[in-house]
Figure (cartoon, helix red, strand yellow):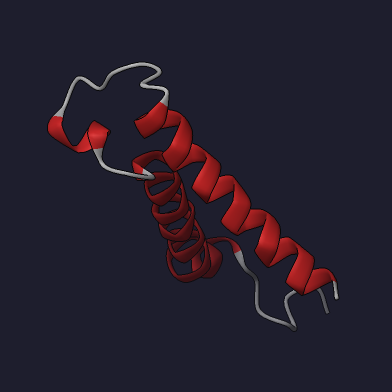
Length: 71
């Protein structure tokens, strides 16, 4: 039940972002891609995925210790 409500909330927020930017014409972009629908949402999502992947596959092996390190 919670997953369905969260998914519906995400869809509503994405639709509101597209409506606010395109219908009300609030703000303007400096670059051509700033005008794409839901650019901010997609950019934020992809940036967070990249941060997670970097942390998991690059930083984790650098900072983790072997299991028997503290024995």
